Amino acid sequence: MEIEIKEIESTRVAYMRYVGLPQKATSCLPKIFKSIKGKSSGAPIFYYLTNDPNKKEVEMEICVPTEETPNQSGVEVKILPHEKVLSTTWIGPYTKLSQAYQILMDYVDEHQIPVTGIAKEVYIKGPGMLMMGNPNKYVTEIHFILKNEE
Image (cartoon, rainbow, N blue to C red; front, side):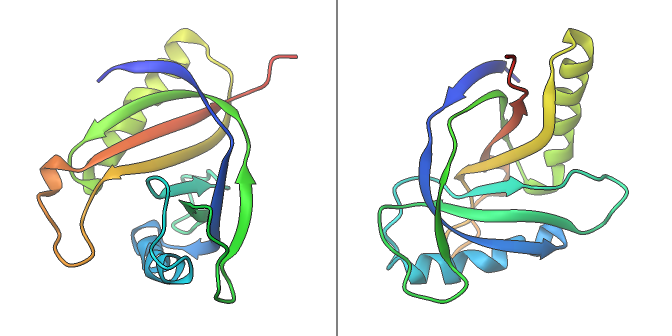
């Protein structure tokens, strides 16, 4: 897996806040897509707000890039900020994403890269709305947000 530092431009998203088990977070996506009439301008993003490996539940924002204004309660709009991230791309099932996280964490430790502890997952290719597809071909970009060096 290639690891790189890259800049992510600010992005307008429709989003919902989610607290719960990470494997259940995708349940928010249909409501978000429905609220923007399916008009997304990019891949869904799970923006983790907490990073406590001792807790089973997570707090995150489920985001879908769009120029549409959501028409359902509970779905809001925000601009994700421009960020510098440490990034890698995982190809494979979501059940093995922890392997990619471990590789990134080892890289951070080895190279003493200052990260915030916040992570994002960008779902480039995953299951479709009707069919699961092949989990071994899912493509997920993982970002560790770098601390601002001012």
